[in-house]
Image (cartoon, rainbow, N blue to C red; front, side, top):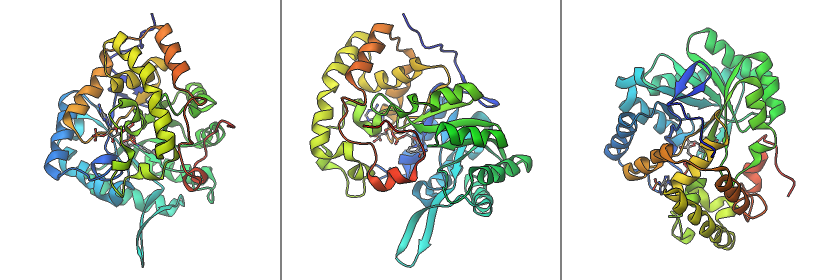
Length: 340
Ligand SMILES: NC(=O)c1ccc[n+]([C@@H]2O[C@H](COP(=O)([O-])OP(=O)(O)OC[C@H]3O[C@@H](n4cnc5c(N)ncnc54)[C@H](OP(=O)(O)O)[C@@H]3O)[C@@H](O)[C@H]2O)c1
């Protein structure tokens, strides 16, 4: 029987965090209408009460609104959790509105950190990620700027998001990298090519974002036509109706494993990640307290090697239909990708 080496915490750089953290993005944008302030507050405080000690936000989310929300709700509980935020991709005002811009220049990262500290109502960000590597700027320069922020006491540890193993090693030579945050779940397996191992080699945590596949792996997202007009999944090929119909059929086999393990599909998806390796920390996002409670129930799930192997066989890069990103978003990232 494979059990997740499940101490009650997992390490990220100098910190010990709950094995499942909370992604806060969708409290401000991404998948349809965000919740009211009161509902978002209830969710964040419930997560804290349930023992979540890693909260993940970014300057980008809601173009600052997500950090503001996290600051307003959690600043008074600051000593109880590890606060992670991100820079290097943010909203910039143009004549025709706010746009998402990748900018990894040192002066931009410094200014972004100051703005984040203010919005988060804190004196220091525990884990500060470069959200995307800006390919116009050497990674050494961007990470050098983050290292200066550590020395200035504004940031405690540095992370990277969606980078290749090569970029990670270059960055790590400038300053220790405590975490890499990249999409990882049964249906997005690219980190298995090199980054998971590179993190192990350098002693970094691997923070798995979109760990329930943006809802797909919960089995509760059936009708993609019902997505809100601004839902970012509308631009993702795997959620295109034809592809999604094929992908949904994979869940029948997954549901059988969930039944055997006595858990829900969402819990199975998270338990699969926790069992894959002890340096993995998934950060599911939700707007609902009942979903939060369900997701944290994954900590109690035990999977054996045969079940892990069966899941691997049912949902993998050969069986999932459609790339995860469209061409525009794909061009922005730096991860190793499978050939086909
Ligand atoms: N570094 C990056 O570039 C990057 C990119 C994307 C995300 N992230 C981070 O990763 C976090 C999580 O990723 P994500 O939000 O994209 O994907 P996710 O956690 O895989 O999925 C979130 C979606 O799943 C639904 N969901 C969650 N638990 C559920 C449950 N038990 N039952 C039914 N539905 C459930 C949520 O809907 P409900 O609200 O209805 O529960 C939401 O629509 C984000 O909040 C963000 O912090 C980072």
